[in-house]
Amino acid sequence: MPANVIIVHDDPIFITAVAVELRLADHHVVTFGDPLEALPVLETEQPFDVLITRIRFAPGRSNGIALAQMTRLKRPEIKVLFTVAPENIEYTEGLGEFLAAPIDIRELAAMVNKLSRLPALPGGGRQRAETPPQRAQRLKAVRCRRRLP
Image (cartoon, rainbow, N blue to C red; front, side, top):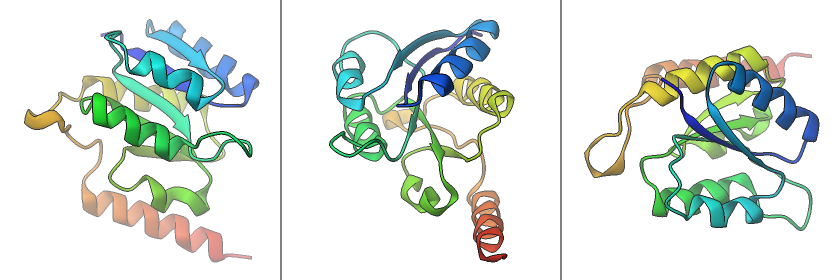
């Protein structure tokens, strides 16, 4: 089932690659390079299933955490997928799912497919793409890899 996806990222090459891959999978894609440009669109009645964003943007721009928080206030049913450097994974807790950099575009597309099939729960929540023990194990693995020389 096609999902309505909004990508908010400041790397035009990343945006293009992800948009192409998702469109090939029959998803509807809208892209923005700045969180503050995307926010008014996210606040409209236009349906979106998945928001893909990063945590940090260039200095002087809002960040992906603020964008996700503001979006979830108006649209608690939207699923958020962060593309994140391993050292920033902890900031995604409770806001959405993440893929640690470097990002594999096919893995990202598979995650969008998975998230778009998860039904919203009563009260605007959503089912998790992974269980808390799975997430803890993955975070532990990332932390261990960061300590290696």
